[in-house]
Length: 133
Ligand SMILES: [Zn+2]
Image (tube, rainbow, N blue to C red):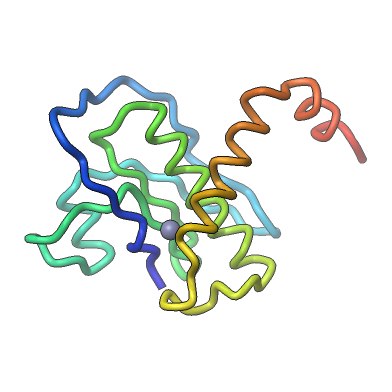
């Protein structure tokens, strides 16, 4: 069930920056833990062999957790967070995400990037929607 398909080649040195990643994410009556983890813990948690690539993040509805790889820029963490949140939205709404092999990582990526742009470029919309009852 772990989302371990979101992998990309990471070339060169990535500089880790201080971050204020939120500790929780709320959706559908659940609170998910958001945790930054190092490469070893991330691979171990998702059961990925140590000699394989490290994914950027993972979503696990069973443990109500989103894991984000530590050694990334805040921009990559944001993109990864939005990717994993998209998995959560799709899972929560039964959008064909119940089995890992059925996940469409490309769709999740594009939706996550879309959410990120909407959030970043539309503070007035976010504010309006946040206040709507
Ligand atoms: Zn994914």
